[in-house]
Amino acid sequence: MCGIIGYIGKKQALPILINGLRRLEYRGYDSAGVAVSDGKKFTKIKAVGKIEKLAEKLKPLDLNGSVGIAHTRWATHGGVTEANAHPHSACADDLVIAHNGIIENYRELKEKFLKGHELKSETDTEILAHLIEVFYKGNLTEAVRTALKEVRGTYGLAAMHSDEPDKLVAARFGSPLVIGVGDGEYFLASDTSPMLAHTKEVIFLDDGEIAEISLSGLKISSLDSKNITKYSETIDWDEASAQKQGYEHFMLKEIFDQPAVFKDAIRGRYNLTEGTAHLGGLNMTSEQMHSVSRVILLACGTASYAALVGKYALERLAGIPTEVDVGSEFRYRDPIIDRNTLVFGITQSGETADTLAALREAKRKGAFVRGIVNVIGSTLARETDGGTYMHAGPELAVASTKAYTNMVAVLILYAIQFGRLNRLTQATGERLIAALLEIPTKMKEVLAQSERIKTIAEKYKDSVGMLFLGRGINYPVALEGSHKLKEISYIHSEAYPAGEMKHGANALLGPHFPVVAIMTKNQLYEKMRSSVEEVRARKSPLILIATVGDESARELADDVIYVPPTMELLEPLLNTIPLQLFAYHTAVALGRDVDRPRNLAKSVTVE
Ligand code: G6P
Image 1 (tube, rainbow, N blue to C red):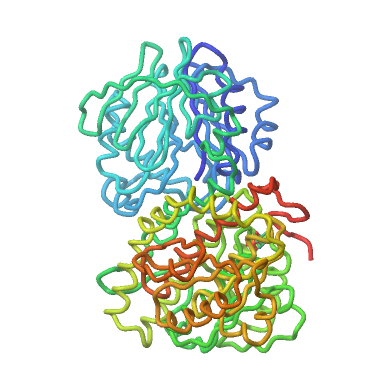
Image 2: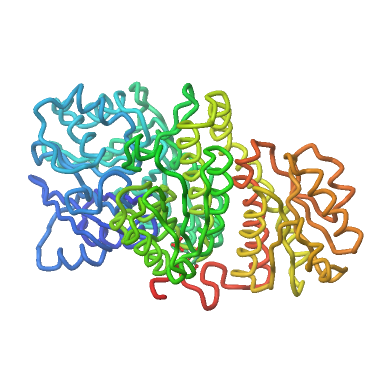
């Protein structure tokens, strides 16, 4: 995600920029940097770590200037190093930029325009800085415009040039930017949270717009040079709600982030015409990939339920026997591993002690060890010989939601990639990729039902326990739905594979005991429906997750939440979302501390 802040006015820029970065830290916090202009030249200071590290480094320096930009990073392209931190310059130090987003065609741009340019970082942003330098002929706005016409990808961009010291240039495509209008001063930021201390008058830039901000005024134009008139609006958010972008809790914001971050997880990693996926970070030759006879997925908590979805996908698409184990068990059970075993550690934080220990054990025994990780440069990312970043952006709520979705997305891509090496046909591969591309729109259809799910949650909030049922690919979904409910609402819940009910859990059923069942239209629909009818007969209140168009579900259930149809293996990407919302609204209705549930931590770095 990353955060940008810029200032132009008459005050000292540095304190405004640093305080602004502190407000933006929730967007990313692995490194940060600032550039301030004293009217002649820039001073650029960067540091690895949280904003406070940068602030400490700046303390002894006397950085004067009333124009500047700053950035807090959440690495997506290149490791967490000072060189990769923003702002970036080009060959000369007279240009600085800070950028959020991904420049997809950075390789092409480098080859076409940057012969003879010396790059100092591994970032796509630096390529953009050099590109602007190539086109700079004394007018920064025009250089930015020309450069962006060559770019494919997403950006929220802030740029300054020392030849035009009283000017900031901003541009947006896919990555938000807001301009704050003060009294003889302007602010620029990724969201409103850093400017609320200074002004509530803001202008939201739209995709394809470039803003030239100077003390003599603000000019907004389109990429093709048409002038655009925009008026400021007054916002009434406080700082905390601005960080949550108006959502009441980080968890709700992160649930709603899912359509966007899912796109980040799959972007550039599939080939529709060949019906395949390509996760380059795997670092295995095709010979080594062919030699894999077994996969083990190691994880804890929510990540372990994402791993279970991965097991179904890898076995079904690639025909590779796959096991899932939680780190705390695997590390002590003397696991059987050989050189043809591929082990993935799956973890949002990359720091979960049990997952790390389990992975080290697998490595000791000679397996191929890879990671599926969210936090760039985390311990697990550093200790594995390759793997994939899931690009979910910073996840702050303890209960994991968007990281789960992106773990599932990456595992499905791996299943397609390994599948295409053996039994998966191109036609099925194509259908899967096409269906993956439809997921974000379908996720939005589920999210649009949040208010109705809230009403359902309020109806059942006083239950003493609940049961979640699923079969096949929806059994892990039931496990995750139950996990979410118990961790944030503190209502006891269990998940069962529906076919197992007759061996014990049927004894729990009755009018006091609600059941949530996932009964979407797939090959196990009829089987699932029989189990649901048994629940009905025993008079448990029934909440069904059903496929749009399945009107018969209404006759069976007390409440139905409809989800759009998709290919069976992709159903968890949609079916988990109503359960996340159900848990969230139940916890809110009970007055729980949703983002920080009792006795739980976001990252469990001890055994
Ligand atoms: C903690 C969190 C869970 C998370 C689990 C694994 O228990 O509360 O939300 O699923 O750790 O975390 P990881 O960072 O390894 O995915």
